[in-house]
Each structure stands twice: as structure tokens, then as C-alpha cells.
Image 1 (spheres, one colour):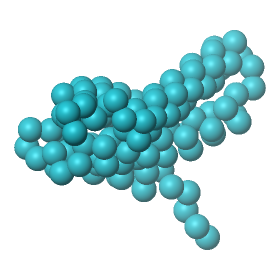
Image 2 (tube, helix red, strand yellow):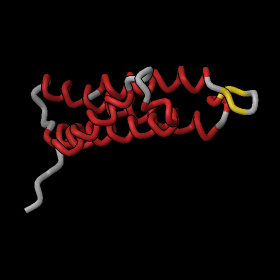
Image 3 (cartoon, helix red, strand yellow):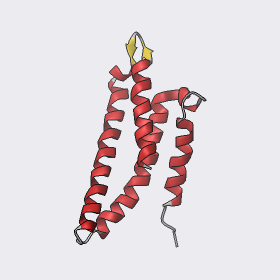
Length: 119
């Protein structure tokens, strides 16, 4: 899941820097750069939480709550990040040139596959 988030973000940073509107790169607009910065922040925070969880496990310390947080947050973040990138890339994200259209299906599948069952 982490690879899909990373690839979507990397591609979106590049594509929004290359595309322009009103003579300026799209990335120069806060409406484009802020959602990407927010996604980057959350991806990094999730990665650090997962690393902390693994460290706790390696040390033989309780880690159940942290593991549950990682299991919940990872798929949710993958879905949210790919959706943000799809929106920022516009129709181009659904073309053959950008492989992100495959990422949206992957992130949706991860999200539904890990959803808790309702009784």
C-alpha cells in the first residue's frame, strides 16, 4: 500500500509542476500544493507510526493498539491519497499515459478488503 501512495504523490508533484494555468505552474497555487503537502505529512506520519509499532514488537513491548492503528490508517490513507492525486491530475489521471487509474482501483480494493465486518 505504501508504494501506491508514494507513486501517486511523486507523479502528482511532477505533473502539477509541468502543467500550467494562466501562465503559472499548477503547483504554485495553494489549492494544489496544500493538499499534496497534507498528504505527504500524513504518509510520513503513518510510516513513522508503523516503524514505531515494529520497534515495540522487536523490543517485546505491548504494541496491540499501535498495530490496530496501522491496520486502520494504512488502507484509509492509501485510498485518500490516491483520490486526492486523481483530483489534482484531473482527466489526465485516467489516460493511458498516467498509471494512476490503476492505483484508484487498488486503493479502493485495499479499503474494502480491510473494512471490519458489521454484525
